[in-house]
Image (cartoon, rainbow, N blue to C red; front, top):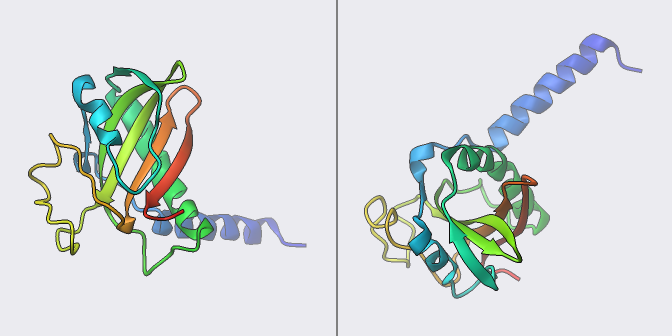
Length: 164
């Protein structure tokens, strides 16, 4: 049986490892789309997206902040669950849109690698992604979509491009 100091040490170590595995995200690396552009985030060619959209809404900064505190760990778990892990989880830029699906408000996340040198997508990062939806066919773990319910604070349908 372990002593209290040993258990406390293990908790500290586990916390440090978790913090190292899930990067802290910079709010400036995300943008909230206005309602009139929110549905454009679902125009993707190689991953599942929400269907049956009956409305749009504007997510609030507090909702996005809560989502961003939770999403890195969710992505890391999904990457490892599907055995997609590489050297490390990419740094992502994020686009957020408020959608109404099945009578519930969700925040759809369109994420993509912040690496400007990512080959093949031809995007000019840091200039056009604030106003236009980014979509790339395939792309592995460099591109993902996720649905977040701000009421239940749960994620659903976390998917990477071109995988499953």
